[in-house]
Structure formats: structure tokens, C-alpha cells
Image (cartoon, rainbow, N blue to C red; front, side):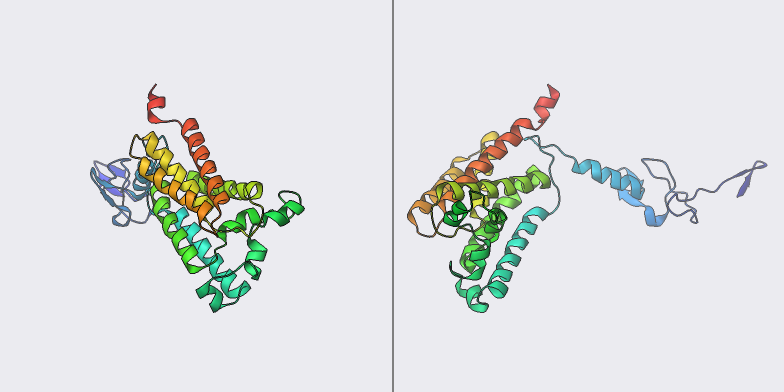
Length: 272
């Protein structure tokens, strides 16, 4: 304590470190803040708590689409890519033929596609969804060669890093899962034979969703639609491409994005 005019006054101490005296106050809350808790800001020195609150508020930015933007790295995109890579390594090295499958790819007779892929003719015998419902999901992480997974992950990275920041992580994850399931549903309904797998169904959902976003923002969406359409047509021509998954994923992705845009509270609607 210090004497002042015959009275006493408590020395200002940092709320987070009561044993430290500080005569520097936070410019937002006015509380004393010690050197360890001081954070430089445009208005001066603020405490750690106010800095965290300001950061939290700044991250709640509603963009032109009405979505809350996700700042920082696209963690969901990176997580999905990582899961696909881990699944490929596990399938080829553990379940498959080892390094030969890893380098040259797998075929329909190997254990990995048998366990994880979608087989419409077998699923039909099991009654539609079948007893092995998990194949609707695991088939989205099944890739048959390095080229297959490499191309899919490249496109996933391109569209994921564009969509995730503007949609937010939760909405982007929901879009990806719904697109994946939409591709699996189309395979079950439209395909009749063969093993189907790959992330391309979900990626086509991102294709379509990105086109919807560009259309909503009145930007050039024709190039994205043309590119996606060409890849979709190639699925009818090139053997080994599951056009059913591509078509189902694209429809599911477009409808999901339209639904999200319809129900989201956009800034313009909030002002009205």
C-alpha cells in the first residue's frame, strides 16, 4: 500500500497476475495489464482478454453470400486430403499388394476395392442400401492408382481452398459429405456393374457448388460449368470413369448450395 493524504490506496495489479504491479491500463477495459499480458493494438496497449475478444469478433464476418467467413488455413480441406492419402496408403500397403499396388494401382480383384468399393450388382442383391451401408462413405476414399488420387486431390485442393473460407468450415464439411453421398446414391440407382470408388463424386459437388456461388455473385461461372460439363461427358466416353457418381455428386452439391443460400441470413436481407 502507499500513503496519500493520510489515506491508503491499493497499487494497481494485473488481474491475470496479482503479484505484479502495473501502471499501464488496457485501452478497452481500463484494467491494469502487466508486460506479459500487454498486446499492441491500433488504439494502444490492450490486455490479452480484450485482444482475444477483438479477434473473435473480427472473425465473425458475414460476407456477400451471407455466410460467416472462415479465416485462417482451410483445415477441413486439408483434413479430407489427409484422410484420402492415409486411406490410399493403408489400402495399398496393408490390404493390397504392397508397393506394387502403391505404384501401379489396384484392380477390382484386390481386397481393398472388394472391402471398400460400391458394387451395384451386389448391393442390389442385398436390398438397395445393403447390409454394408458404410461403403457409401468408404467408396469416396477408394482410389485405384497414384494418378487417380493425385488428380482428385489436386482438384479438391483447388476448390476446397476457394469454398471453405467463404462458406465456413461446418458448411463446407456438410457440402462435401452430402455430395459424396449423392454420388453414391446415383451409383446405386444408375450403375449396374463394376466397382465404383473415388472422391470425384464429392469433388463434382464442389464443382457445381462453386458454379452456383459464381452465379450468385454475378461473376463468370460459364468456364466452371463448361469444365465440369466436359469432365462429365468424358465419363460417358472414357472407360473406368464413374459418370453416375459425377452426375449424382454434381446434383447434390448444386442443390445443397442453393439450399444454404436460400436459408442463410444475408446482409441485405438482415438490413431489410
